[in-house]
Image (tube, rainbow, N blue to C red):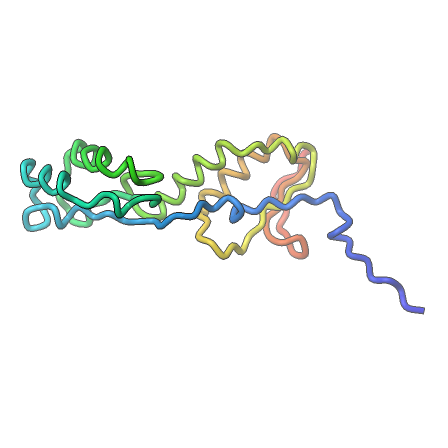
Length: 168
């Protein structure tokens, strides 16, 4: 007589937290202002303001924007602020930085608002191997949020997890 195969993972109280479930749709755009500068280095206020005023900002509807300048130009703070006043009515989020910093900032907002009370006193596995570009910082942020709540925190998949924390 053969023994029945038992799926112990399915029977466990282990809860999976998948950051990919929280990934917001919307194009990520790196908006480089270097082309708005004289020879890529000199910001002329009048010209800069004119370009901002006449730019097609509606194209950024529903996007996430990372403002940057890829040259070594010294950009006054007001320049990025001015662009923000034009693009904010259309974009979901605007930051100064890289696309990676943008993703971290998006996830910071999302994780701040997640109610983790469901995970109280439960073993939690933070799922790895996402198909969407979840930033590494998001894993740190959700770990910090789960530590005071969860009985234990692991990373990976239920069949091959890495234990990270266990409450004493």
